[in-house]
Image (cartoon, rainbow, N blue to C red; front, side, top):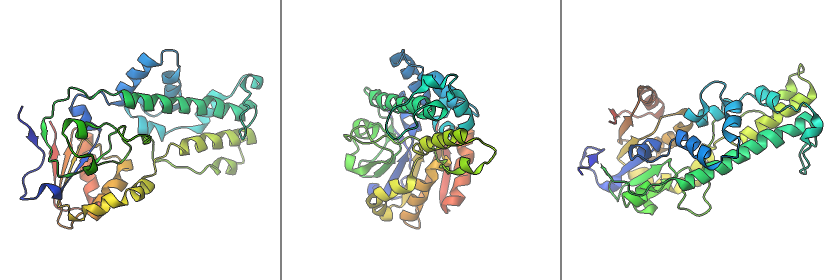
Length: 302
């Protein structure tokens, strides 16, 4: 099989190249790593669970949840969540864990909504670990001496392309690193005290809204702390003279990482940004200004 070269030669050494890899990379290799695949996994493996129905109820107000999970998580409506969780009979919603409200509306938020989010996390982690990458054929030219920053949890680079693991940074966690956390979430951190400043809302509802916000703040990504944790990797990019981005959707939540890369690589660095959809193209095009890069090329990935 002839392999596709993502970069022009540029006359560069392999170790002067950085590849930034998103989920489109795994999808290109026919790996079932889309959120729709996650939904199918839940349907098959959590048959006794109402997880799909509950997540659709809580998060599908502005978009189809399973089509865009992370953006949907950030678009929650605490009033909608509270309305659903509010018990008809408060005595049915006793919640006895220490440190939580004991009954009624306030207790139903951690018991119903909080438990749903815990179940979602457990299912997500189990699904990630179940993703099959066996029998994947490499069809891209990826030099082993280059550096790689991947947003994927899978070890496709290491297992399929034999990239040394010391050259790969799984910025959102890796399933081949024991105990590593799989980062999933949104970028909408909110003030948990905001509901208490609305005098038109009764106190039990203020408490409930605040608890919903607190729970969802725990699902907010923290790119700054992740970047700080991996500062050694970013410092190693100072000799990088070419960056190739493939399989990324160029969402706002990813921009802190790209900005960090842009500020870490050499000043004359060349950028190749691949896109798959028209929306990806528009976001990639608008992002280059914010990244402060001048020598770049936008390329469709067929």
